[in-house]
Image 1 (cartoon, rainbow, N blue to C red):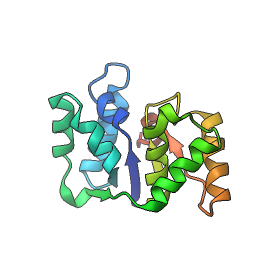
Image 2: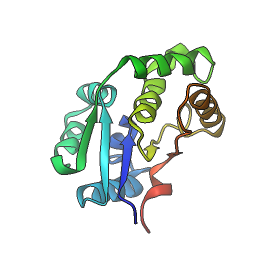
Image 3: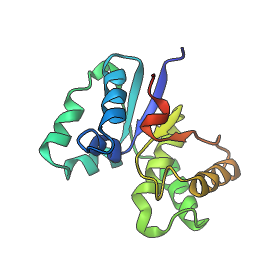
Image 4: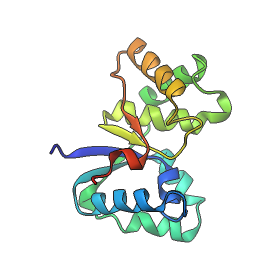
Length: 152
């Protein structure tokens, strides 16, 4: 099986401690820790984790550095984020959600994984992200919730 580079937004970190999402979230983190995938994080995710409860922040420390990649902001990321908002995929109040998609797209990850069903894992939004990506010379990006990507 191909080694995947998976971008996680903050919701998956929170899901690790949430009764509704715990099973799939913990399995996904176990797979990342075991080296089945590389966890890709952005400055946006790291900034959001800074505001999270301590136990959520500690979860990041459990990921071995060899299984972790940090992507940094660029003009390309900001322009793509703004293109999603200009196109109405999400509103300006969802700037960080658009930024997660832009970071992951520019980084060329294999997929984005999120529990955010309103602004990220939402078929209407995904269609919009894909359209903007194509118009701006990027590939459509695979977007899923953890339960769709963990190994059974």
